[in-house]
Length: 198
Image 1 (cartoon, rainbow, N blue to C red):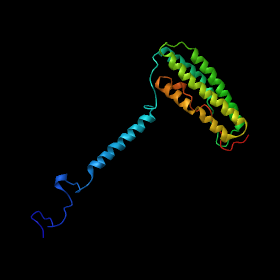
Image 2: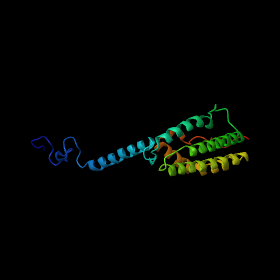
Image 3: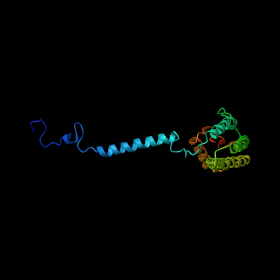
Image 4: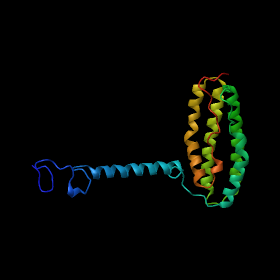
C-alpha cells in the first residue's frame, strides 16, 4: 500500500524531514563535524610549526643595533663553514669529513667570540650569553664528532654528534625568534655515509 504522498506504508523512510532535506536518518553529523574541526585544527597547528611559529622563541632581544651587527657577522662567516654539496658519486671519506668538521668548529668558535664582543643592551646581554653558551655546546660536540671520525668508527661518530642536537635546536629557535635567522647553526657538520671509506 502507498499513502497519499506516494510512500509505501510500513517502509522505513530513506530521509528524515526533521533532519533536513537530503540528510539520511540517523547519520552522525555532529561527530563528523567535530572530527572535521579537529583535523582542520591539526593541519593549522602543523602549518604554524612548519613556518617557525610555535617552535621559535621567545622574542626577547630589543637591541636592534646588536641584531644588525650580529647578522652582518653571521652572513660573512657562515658560507665558508657550511659543507659544499657534491655529486652523488663523490663520497667523502670519514677523515676528510672530520677535517671539514674541525674547520667548521674553529670557524664557529671564532664567530662566537665576535658575537660575544659586540656591544649589546644590558637587558639583552643575559640572553645573548645563554645563546652563545648553546653555541659552545654545539661546537664541542662537533669537535668530539671529528675526533671520533678519525678512528673510522662512523656509527660511533654519529652517536657522539647527537650530543649537540638540543643545544643547536635551542640556539636556532632563539635566532629565528630574535631577528638572527642568518645565525642558525643547522647543517654545519656533515654526516658521513654509514660505511664511509677512510
